Image 1: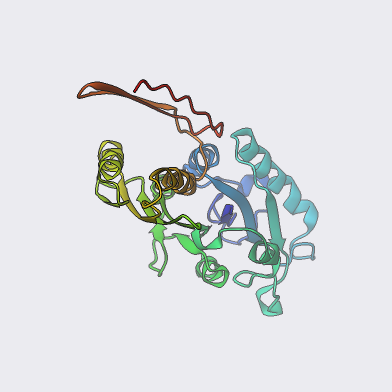
Image 2: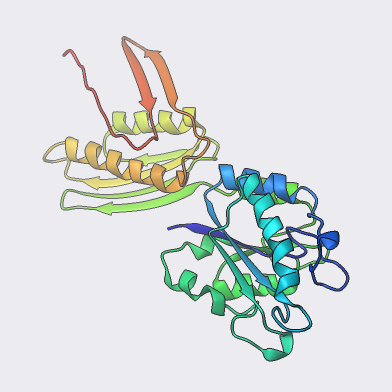
Length: 290
């Protein structure tokens, strides 16, 4: 499922003027380091970007459209020139007194995200108002509050550098359960762990090999298996491999920024070579002399 960053515009990407209307180029000023960090987020992290903004009375005499769109279009063109592309720009035009269901913190503009195949639990609303924090709660998401005030949320900050670091450091974890007529497997994986492992496959040497994966990969890995070892070992080994691959796939999310990995280990009287390619092309060559 896709994760989303629901990002406010005024006061978050650009500075908000005293009259709370960006209706001229003279008023337009980007929030410090918003562009550079949004560019890094767009290029490196696995989030869909959606802009959600309240523009009080847009299209009325108090805020004519012909004063809004020139500056808004310049904002979007500037962001796109730095690789920052929003899949949607959702604008509510109502006044606060209208009590509109589409006005933040209500979710009327976002029903397709609620009903769609999105990971809202691990998505974020980023904004400078308490209504943005409330929107996150209404969506079942987390909030990043761009403010020097306090609020109950995942992060409160006035620095986009910190927003980037926080999102970059989100835990890469997975929990996989796989049950067939031959095996019952449960795996927990934390890619950013410390090398802790707990193996119960019923095969001592297999446990030992899996422990090395956790230790040398500096990851926390727990594998518990009930398999038909009274018949053969291969069902257990094959199904653990499938479940472990699923766990890596789940924990990694997007492959952005991940390099290919190779490892060579001379051990006792054999030579062990491991190559892991997360590019999505499964391929195995097995050469053995017994």
